[in-house]
Amino acid sequence: MTTNTAKTAATSKHPATPKDAIALLKADHEAVSHLFGEYEKTRSVANKKALVKEICVALTAHAQIEEEIFYPAVKAALKDRLLVPEATVEHAGVKSLIAQLEGKEPDGEMYDAKVKVLAEYVKHHVKEEQTEMFPKAKASSVDMVGLGEEMSARKAELLGQL
Image (cartoon, rainbow, N blue to C red):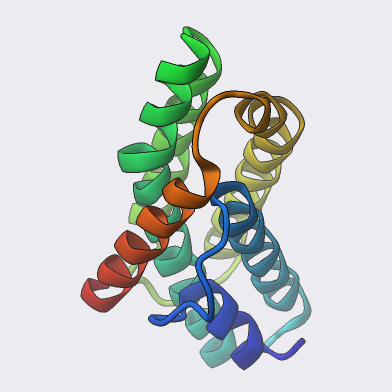
């Protein structure tokens, strides 16, 4: 998959078809993981900057649809008092690193270190969501297709703004 393909998957303004909420989130996870892999391979400052911009936009939209739509639905359905709050705290760490990277030039080891830590945070967060939260959410009474449609529409709106 090329960076352009990853960009389409991560930041497409017009999703091909509505997916269930979990499929949508997993597709985002895969696209961002690919972008981090591309970042690790490149030495070009211009490519690093472009990839970080894509990563930041994708993660910002993803976190927002989770916080606005997915997490409240899951929290209510599961009567959750741990998974969603923990995920929200993890988002705060990701958002902090995004803020430190946005608009900055890839100026060496500190920039690369922030991208690496961001990738590690995201990898940890994804693993917890996919092994703990998603199976419980899927087994709940939440309409995942309806939720996915709502999330797709909101994501398209956000990407238009970002």
